[in-house]
Image 1 (cartoon, rainbow, N blue to C red):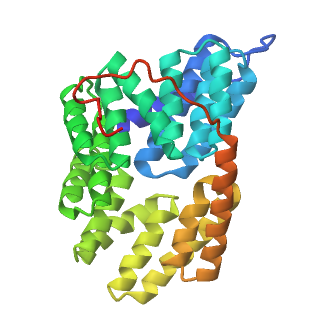
Image 2 (cartoon, rainbow, N blue to C red):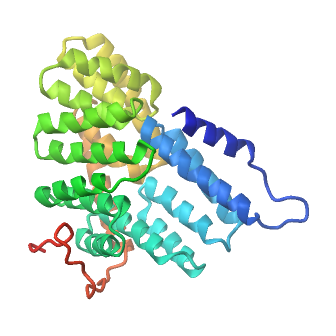
Length: 342
């Protein structure tokens, strides 16, 4: 984490606008700012910091204005758009990057992530399998493993998780920790709490500051009856993260553990933050806020109103996304890629 912070600090220190007489950013400046956007997104993911996502989005907007002819500008803005679930806008940015010469494999990976996020699994599967056939490395196999896990193909996903880990050649703990975390989410979805806990714990052992993994560890602890352990995990997260999910989770566990006064303090904090985020980033937070109000928040009418709003938004979002058939003439046949059920 110190290394990540040092990289961010160095890039921030080097930020500056176009020099006198210069109308657009130089390629090195574009590359540096694009890297900064990606590192801020990474830190936001690890620490649960929405402020990092927001700063990344600001920088990406600046980059598109400063270097509109550079494909990297549009690529990083597509990533920030997707981070806040503005998927139609993200796809439009990917199209802009394509017109400026962006690499097709990179575009396909970004597009697959968006299609996966909106549950266009068949289309995403074609892109993920094609990438894994072309270059079966840690990155492509990990992406395919996560997609199969989300599709409920647990056996195929497990095989891919194992194969991806076997092919890892990097030294950074972040991608492996994320893979462990995703594996934990798969088993949590299968209600295998002990398997889920083992993988969340593996992720935290690699990156102790990994907030999402720590939060889900607390969730599993609470489900297994270890409420004190869950509270001990959630309290520092609720203090350090500006994502209200942790404050809401802490409020729920405290209430169940017989601490109503502290629970109410955290409930109020989470409620205020959800209201703020729904106004600023509705696409990304309406569904989370609805779940909060229907449960810990204790305001069912407000929760149902947000549920209706989210359904309307999903319908609009689906209409905004392209409906097209992706060619399937080069699907892979390797044993860990092929799925005879599809």
